[in-house]
Length: 189
Image (cartoon, rainbow, N blue to C red):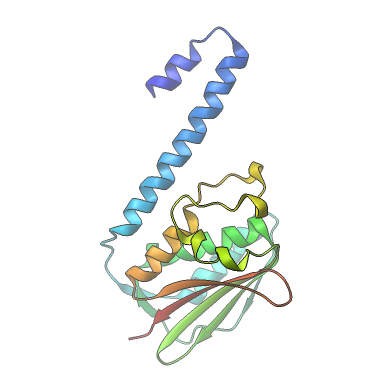
């Protein structure tokens, strides 16, 4: 806030605008870093979650912004997990698919021992050698990303940490027909 006030007092409008843009970027980076750190130490208590309704709400939110998401499969029963953590995990995966791909779909497989939610897109994918590295904090693959889209390289790290806090995981794979699949798996026990 102090830096913003000082920037507002600058006489040079061009310099003031540059400072303002830098401050917005810094605030975004600090915010996502704090989100990442909170994701590492989540004490949210597990409770029954209607995952089908959660995914449908994400679909509706995306449609409000002009993005179509197709949902395949159904969740047979509530999942016992961390509601805010699960929503954040799935939202990060959906946001990446919408940002870097097209024809986004959410595919649900509900089995006795495991719930799997895959977010698929038709986009550039990720080089095979980088599929694990993108889960490291602050890693961005510049070749597959447009610099104007932003991002700090924490979304996938946060998603995986949240999944692991519920006993699950997030894995990536390139799809044969093009694009990427981010697969969230969660134990039912």
